[in-house]
Image 1 (cartoon, rainbow over the protein chains, first blue to last red):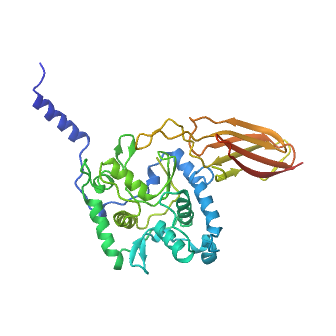
Image 2: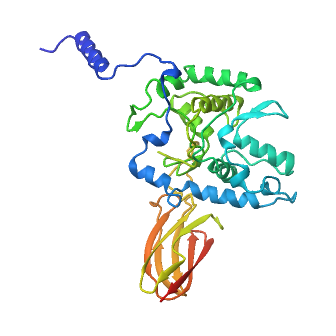
Image 3: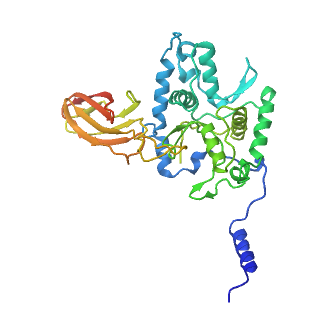
Length: 262
Length: 109
């Protein structure tokens, strides 16, 4: 004889609870986030570490060319900044940061475009264009192996608070916050993949799913899509605030851009 | 997509008779033509169709590429060092646009 449906359901729930106890919503301080690179397969780790096999290096190489190429204004990045290996070392590890002239928070992509507008008389590169990805990848590459450290006080404080709120707010039809997966369940499986700690130390990354390099904001949009929430606009205040909060969570972690992710 | 960024790794020097490993990478979307975008419109096919390498004027490697090959194709092959000369790497896409890269190989006795 079949057991009553309610009993079966109770047994199923108990089995489920026993199999995968959902941890209580923990504080960030209890966790030590690690780079998403830690969750890669040995093959992908080797691919990321090999500067030739890593496809992200195609963009770094392109960025190196852009660094030297002057536009109609006659100025290139190199005209003011010289050798990127020296002048850009550690820069990406400090972003997002406050732009003193406008007192707003800008990420690396926006900083590149501000510089192009103010000092080079150029039009900004569009978000996710190969040009902007290349320039970002080239600059982020100069900070490889250096520790992330962003400033969250002063004018950045409201952005940090906004980012923190967004990270812990449930959103979308699935009604999930970033923290529910990336803090509480980090290191566990989501279908065939391992949930990362959600620290953006490898961005821009070459994602196998994208078959291309992509920015952190593209990744955030994918996450929002995944929980069926409204996607952040590229370069929006909300996206940059969240980027700042993620960067603060990654405090002290080594940068590994351009990283490879699934 | 002419002048796509390319990367080539190979030794600059080799002994005569040595087997030389050559790695070539090019940035290209390799769009299959079977996918559709968010509006349901099909994305037109955009692939590299041919990759040819000549060494001192002689063809040493030829490859036909198809829609099943991933974006940013990465090819590793080997050849025997016979004489000092230039390796010319030529990628041709479906529209006939050509990307060329060159590397010198010096062969010692």
